[in-house]
Amino acid sequence: MISDARSLTLPADFYLGNRNKLLEQLPESCFVIVYAGNTVKVSSDTDYRYSVNRNFYYLTGIQQTGSVLLLRKSPEKTEHALYIHPNDPTRERWNGKLMTPDEAQSISLIDNIRWLPALEDKISDMLNQEDETFCIDYSDCRQEMKALRDCIQDKAKNNKTIDISSYLTRMRMVKQSCEIQMIENAIDLTGTALLATANEMRAPVSELSIYAKLDYEMAKQGCLLPAFTTIVAGGENTLCLHYIDPDRRVLEKGVLIQVDIGGIAGGYSADISRVFPVGGRFSPRQKQLYDIVRACQKKAFISIKPGVKLADINREVADLATQLLTDAGVLIQDQDISSYVWHNSAHHLGLDVHDVSYRYEPLCENNVLAVEPGIYIPEWGFGFRIEDDVVVTANGCRLLSSGIPADSDEIENIILS
Ligand SMILES: [Mn+2]
Image 1: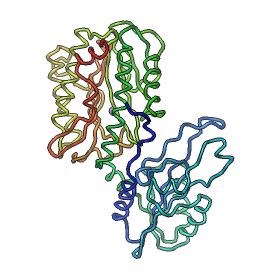
Image 2: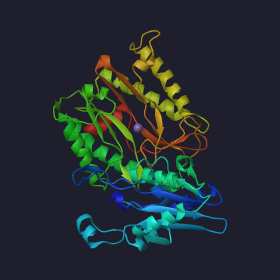
Image 3: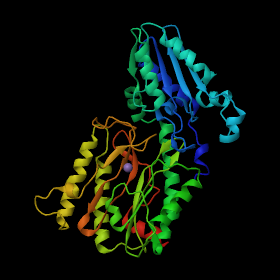
Image 4: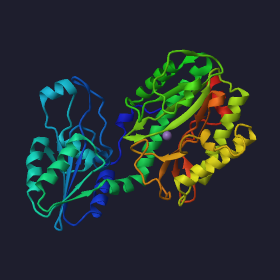
């Protein structure tokens, strides 16, 4: 049990190290500008809960709306500056306390903390310089980044721009030990929520009540905004991969419920899927498919190691699924497995649940993956995935979510115990 996932932080020198590593790869003289982003409006004067630009977070550790990171690299020296909202009693009366410069400095190890209103003049000065290189995050599609790109284009005096998102993607793909630890925290809180919910499935239950229980169990641990909208799909709804409108209809004993859920701790995501039989016992047919999907997942775990590509894992899973579904009489000769295997078996995991990556490149040590083979059989009226998270090691992979039972008999036990 995580007492409050919001209080978990990475060490400040992690962010400083990331800034330095980025700067090392950039030209000898340049500016780097990265935006945290602002809240997004729902309607009228209501906003969605704030979610920070992940590249900004990776470089600063700061999660306050509107903040801007400005780095200056020159042959003589490097300067790191952070622009944040100035303290403002009226704003704070409505929206809560703003970060002080001291707080921002201790999280990010940035010495030069400035107030946001000074940023506009600073950017104008920068744009007035000739032959300057501006390094910006092209993957950031928020309004303020678009405005900056337009501005640089309009005022260009032989200036160049460089997209830093590719450098950051490459850095984010290889996790440092504090990041892996934080993903393990996110998995812990997700597992706690799943286990606390599993025994609700002993009796008839609805998708909606399971959804509400999971939401409650996550929020209790400080996870108010999960990594993605929790999926709770019962019966035929398991055949919709991203099913997010849980129904209040009662699901009787014997119906399967797919749960796909990911908590966030210290900015890092988990991604776990389990499938539960209402009443606690799989039917022979459900258990048959469960054990096939689980065998595919174990096959994937064995094949993951440095040098292997995600496409290789997909192929290994598809080959085994083909063989096992043929043995089971589901797949008939020459029928394509894509009728039953609808999605890839693994993706990178990190600050984003489908983390930024070069997914066609071979894996390397300290990549973190969610491994989620799934088989969906419309003729049987159900299908599902089983999903766990691993870190790639020197010779294979280490399961990060081993604390969350995954074999069919274990699933039955946690419902009935
Ligand atoms: Mn996933």
